[in-house]
Length: 302
Length: 275
Image (spheres, rainbow over the protein chains, first blue to last red):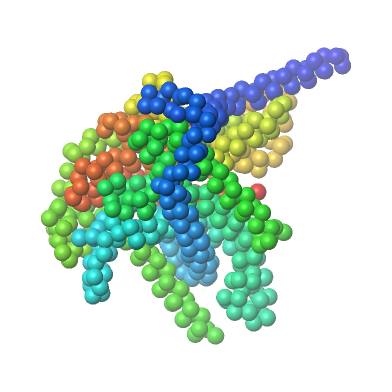
């Protein structure tokens, strides 16, 4: 009697395990073929020269040495850091500001929320094309406005001095709504009683924002910060669409992912591109780790 | 007291409306230009509304590229990616969340680790795999790697974890198979998760740029996002045509967004919540 129950349990356990493995098999197969194996292969490629016929020959550290000497790459790194350094804090501040405005008791909040969110559902390639048209030196909307104000028109995305900043505006425009929704959800989770107590003490709205909202919201702010930095380092679509190779501002807007793409798929330097992708990965990891350590100073988890 | 608060409200509205202006302006400018003639688009100073609504630009786009074909490719690739991810990720997520088997947690960590790596790392080898199996410039190239999503699995697992354990116990004692339990008992309970996954995946697949740009280069095999860059290159000064292409490319996602607004926004709001 007892033996059969044991056997039954064992049988059931085997069945359970079998089903468990069976269900994850399609995903794991795909993950191994398209992600884990490529990850390893990419690492290997970074120590190889991969020619036009995709034959790899061992190249040692030469790709990395080449990276050190590549002025274009250093410039792209600088552009990328500038892009992240400006769009992330500015975007975060703007999304916090809009979220705070929408967290008040006013009419039409869901309408505002919807419109602000629109840029994040639309194709960035299409949107970049529209912005390029707005920035157009001769016929664009921006210069028409500038001229109407009596100022002289400007080649916004052909002037190397302004091009990257114009691209940043599009980057911020595209992400504020998304981050605002996340921050707003976090704000709505803060108990009203804190604000009531603060109001009794006579704290102003701005003081309440910095003394209650920001600290209580810090885990959400941290989340938004981390994800914005990661996606900021990977900006591509917008710049590819807005600043073509013939553009005079090409070099001053080229980012790391852009230079990675050019090397891998235009110039056929796949080994070198692999090394660049490892650089991108390392920088993102480093910055994320620094943020993880830094968060202890300002993020409150109850 | 009351006075200041209504003054503050007015100020809030004014700021928010200004923000809406900036957010919506590119969309309006795109729409207006798409109905202009090429000549009018180059008027100085520019007109805001078209003097006369013409659909010439749409005609030009549709004939310039095999736009109908490109549209179908994009729809096809999006639908397959969504359907594939729902099946593959849900199945795996359910297993990771609710079935106990040796090695489960380590395997889940392996899947999770993919989430932390920027996509460029995989790109060159993925391209070479697709090339090696002779799938460059074919439909499967567009969606194959995207069927397997660490993000989708992670998200669905969170939904399965939130359900109580007792749900399945009785069914297991009755001898129900796991697949039956998943389909009949669990799926209806994680419907909101599936909707979120569908929305996220559809948005991603529809708007994806770099991967389709790399793998499918002939005009009959590409998707909308990279097709726009082709359009920009071919019709250098035909701004109405470019804008018409952009309008056609963004409309399906905007419609989807307005239909599933609540789920879209809740899904996004959820991603920032800890737990």
